[in-house]
Image 1 (cartoon, rainbow, N blue to C red):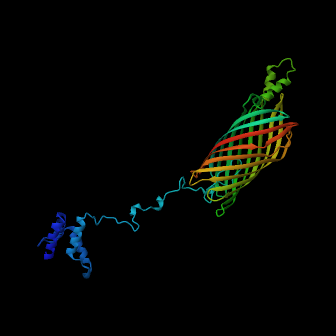
Image 2 (spheres, one colour):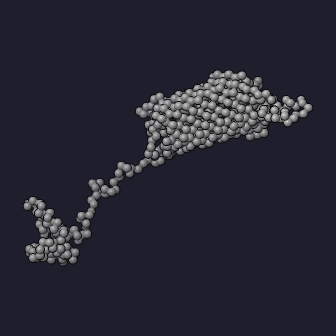
Length: 419
């Protein structure tokens, strides 16, 4: 060992303690010791120095001192991970897949009813412009008041009802799909007078048809669609007044036998069957990310036959009608900041032609409906909400000096899922 090395080792022992002395001794072979007794670190350093050009060869003493200082300070030279240029460790850097999502945002867009980032709601009383695969379950309740006025006198009749609705859509192609549905409804008079004169009725209605997309523009957020369907209904009514009226008609007899009762009991019931078709053209327009407007024009052509009784005689009335309808719906959706959407809808229905071979009511006025609803929209694959509908200006003349006015409210809870 050279004299300089001996001086440095001695000085290191005095100032740095045993750790520096042990490290230096482990890296310095004893005089006369063979090469294999060198430490692995010293052998690696020697091999590295031999690979360098002659002019870049480091001083062995300087290298030993540098390594000893690092060991004494406790720095792990080979295991320390340096920070990146911005001062953040590599493991702390955000990866693309770990980027935070917007509140309540869903991964799937379901673009068949989404334009410019806005997911459209379906109106309650009008058709929509979209071709979707969906399943809908709805539970509704209704209350209706009918006032009959004749001069200063009037009579109020009250009805309450419930509706169960099931609807399905199958999207075969982005431009065409099938839809169908079934509604079950029951209604009854809720006061003695209404229950006696009008009783209760239950009905089942159905619809089935095709939905198509005429055009779609992602740039302007516009979609135009059309629907064509067949529809029908079966209604069964129970009316106590008709039975009492039939019994009064036979009261001139000396007595009413059991055979007379059996013959008159069917007058308690009446049944109506209807079938027809419906066509509509529907427009959807996105007004940015949070707002939209929808419009619909439709025509309904229906034919109905009503079986009732006059005494013991069956009477069948046939009615045909053509009605036009128009609706508009506006939506505001808070997604992705708040998973709540509001719906406002207006609907107008007017009978433009009718024919009947039974008692006819002339001058049927147009019917106006207003709808308001609130939906949860935190998941693009589902719509969950509550809507409330009411009729306005629903009045007509049903007989000379007799006016009928309807006031109704309908509420519905809807669960619709898209797949």
